[in-house]
Length: 81
Image 1: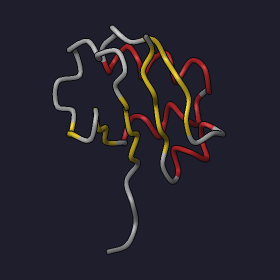
Image 2 (image 1 turned 120 degrees about the vertical axis):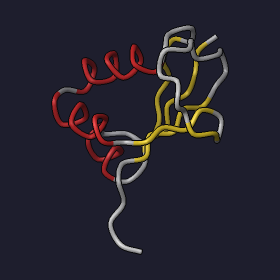
Image 3 (image 1 turned 180 degrees about the vertical axis):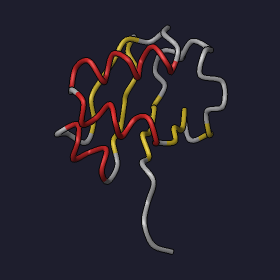
């Protein structure tokens, strides 16, 4: 089973889509490498400064394997208040 990656704001623009799937079982760092490879340097730059939610919870351990069926939200820094 796969996981779902959802992009918001600048991450959506850099990826050229709002959502996609990826293989479960890899760590967040591995997933980010895969996504940067898929979409190029523009998304890679956003991923370096983004925050990530795994099933709605902030991800602080980027080495733990992501579970099948999880939803990963990519949240770039937001301007404003």
